Length: 185
Image 1 (spheres, rainbow, N blue to C red):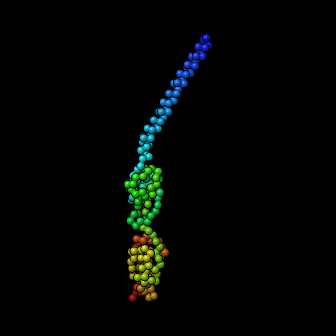
Image 2 (image 1 turned 60 degrees about the vertical axis):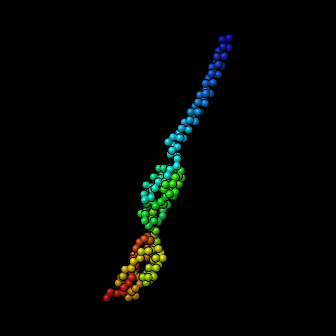
Image 3 (image 1 turned 135 degrees about the vertical axis):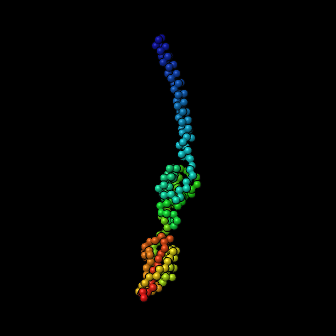
């Protein structure tokens, strides 16, 4: 009988243990769900919220990239000629400053390479008017004539340019055209 009573006590203890374990597991799962919900609404959720693209125009490219990366954006850099923005400075962004974007989205920064550059055409032996027209057609708007003593054959003809022919120069650069005046008297 004692053996039978001991068996009954052990069975009751197991039933009590099972009935206590199930609510404990349910409570643990509920606590985990609540913790996930709270963390989703906490500071990390705010970090995932949309941000306005800041105005980084005029900043150095590294500073602008750091500001955008700190907001969680992916940054692409693209060079673009600009006559008024110094080289290595940001011209603009895409999407534009003030636009709302998701962290992880791409913001393209356009970085100035300075004024557009072109090769100076060879205008030697042309009249100043023809040389000027050829330089204007190449995109150089600031053409200046400077007289220079020359051989009789070079009189009224282009002797040289500064910058020299075949050299790249900014389109905003002044192109000095030296025109022969003939020998000095």
